[in-house]
Amino acid sequence: MWTESESGFISQFNKPYDIQLFLDHMPYNPNAECRSPRLVIAEQKAHCFEGALFAAAMLRELGFKPLILDIMAENDDDHVIAVFKIRDCWGAIAKSNTTALRYREPVYRSIRELVMSYFDFYFNTLGNKSLRSYSRPVDLSRFDKKNWIQSGSDLEFIGDYLTHLRHYPVLSGESVGQLQRADKKLMDAVFLGANEAGLFKPEE
Image (cartoon, rainbow, N blue to C red):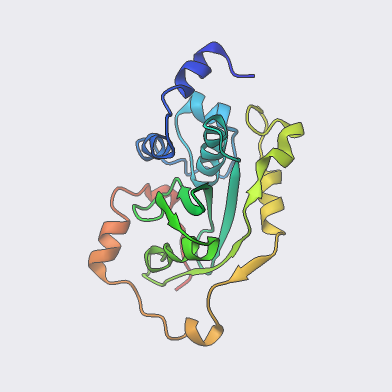
C-alpha cells in the first residue's frame, strides 16, 4: 500500500505524459542497481530500467496495464521502456541518459513499429547505430507477489526475466554492415546533458 504522502505525490499524474515529464526532470542514476518505484519516489533519481518500472507502476494507477519491454543493443546499453495502448495504438514512456529515447506518442499500430521509431536515434558514443532486437511486452503484475512496486530489495530478478525472453531481430546481418554512423550534430543533440558516468563505453 502507498503511504498518504506517496498517494499525494502520485495524484499529480493525470495522463501518461505527466509521468514522462517527471522522469525527464529527474537526475539519471548511473549505478548498477534496480530500485522499486517506491524508492524512485523517495530518492528522486532513476536509470532506464528503474524509470520503466516506475512508469509502469504509475500507468497502473491511471488504469493501464503495467507493461514494459526490453530492447537489446550491440556494443551499447540495452533499453527498457514502459508501453501503453490507447485506441489500439501503442505509446511509450522511458527514462534515458540521452534526449531521444524517451516518450513516444500513442500513434504506433504495432510494437515493432513503436520500437523502430527509436532506431535512428539509438547509437553509442561512437555514433554506431546499435538497436538489434526487442521483446514482447511483459505484464509486471506477474511479479506482484514479490512486491515489485514497493519493495526495499533490488529488483534485478525482473531484469533476468527480460534477458531470457525471446527477442525479435529488427535487421539482418547484411543490413548491419550497411548502417551509417550518426552525424556529429545529431550526436551532440542526443547526448546533450547526459550523465557521463552513466554512458556505455563501447569497444572501438
